Length: 394
Image 1 (cartoon, rainbow, N blue to C red):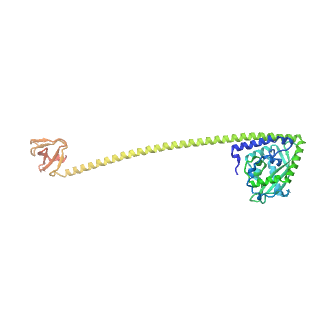
Image 2 (cartoon, helix red, strand yellow; image 1 turned 120 degrees about the horizontal axis):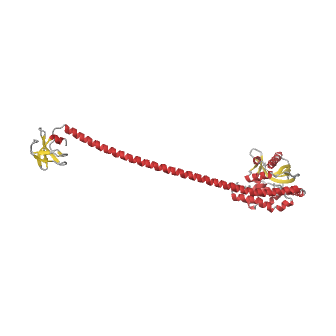
Image 3 (cartoon, helix red, strand yellow; image 1 turned 90 degrees about the vertical axis):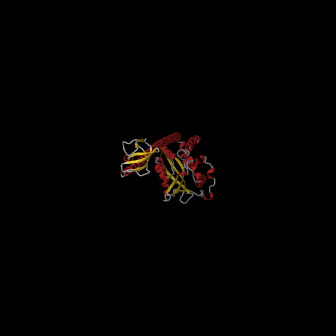
């Protein structure tokens, strides 16, 4: 079952239905018939509800009870107590209490009930005319009563129809889907089988006779009392004002809800954007840190490699130095590269003539080292002698 109050367009149409119904049936009010919308007094006006026959298509007529059976009057004490409790709560505007025994009760009907409680003081002399409903322990009920307006002497007779069912705990409750209000407003979808039974019930001869009797009594009562007629007119005007205000309130509430939803969405988007920006900034910072770490690691690696190369060179040099320090001669055939300017002598004497002087980078080949501390070398196709200790430091 879907509630049309969830749809703004349907909500507007439903409330306009009330206003239109009041305007279209003004002649009935002036003639003394208080319609179903005006306090839901006479169920006879349900024929003016304009229900579509299409909702009844496909009804399983074989499941519809024979609504032509005679009334049982005030035979079910529990049912009479339920209906009496209903009218007591209705007059006081106690919608929470009503919702416990008449369900479902829509927000619009709750608002309407609270409006009506401002006009109606009490219901008395309640009688229940019942017939069997569609299911076991369900009832079609015509409730008759006398209604008193606030601040007005006298009462007016009224009549209303209910569909009463038994819950899983075995207690009776009013199935408010078939209330006079929902029948007029059509806020909620109903079971076509039950609806067909109710329509058959309303069309039965004894129900029509009861309706006609109460309509006549109502007409005579209101026509004879100007104060009661004025009260009816006040109720009519009050319902029209309520309808207009309800539309405005619901529209304002929906507008406020839409604006709040938009504001919440904007706030969520802003928070999401801020979070995305923060995440991007953190990602960029992490990327920069990673790149810096990579650069530092590369620099450390390069430094480590350079240090390793230097260490290897130092170690080779040290090994060479150690090797050289352990020798006082150079092996025959060793080739050296001069790292200084060496004087090459004709003989093993520092006073002997020079064959020449090497330049740094010149190649020298050892011919033979002598115990006298000199080494004979080949240099640029020439032979001569150089102090062995100089070559050992080379």
